[in-house]
Image (cartoon, rainbow, N blue to C red; front, side, top):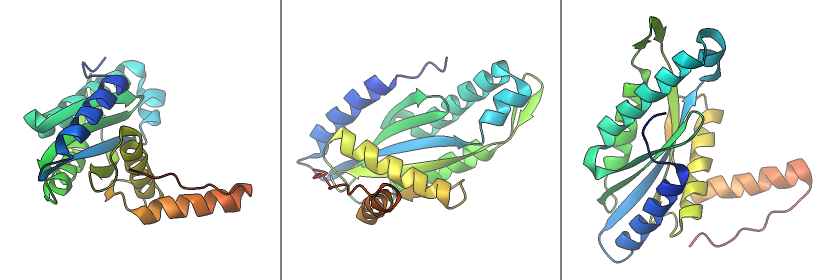
Length: 183
């Protein structure tokens, strides 16, 4: 639909990116981008309008990422991208801000005006992990922190998010979740 690579391709790109930043002064950041309140677009305006929104969102994200990384559609209304930058650069934060602003701009698609927001979670290699699964997990936790805090924001992963998840899981289920090394 969007012409973007799939989740599988993104995982391969992320693994290659992790390998390439292990021994140099650069990092890669994984962004998980989830559209806020997308379901009403399909419910009110129909799936054709929803599809048009997804295509426009893909184009806006791709325009921001450009040649610095890979953009993929994870499924539904969730997108991801892997971006290379210098170690401890502010590029991921600036790029996330640009994405939020671009996705908040109204879209006029097939006679329907749609205005959305997105919530973004970001994890970085080598800082937050050295496997695709650990980085995706970290970005996912960061994104859900933003969802809980009101949406339309971005967050970077930090270890405390994982501790809080394990604590909530233990309280909610009575099951203790033992952390696995993120490296």
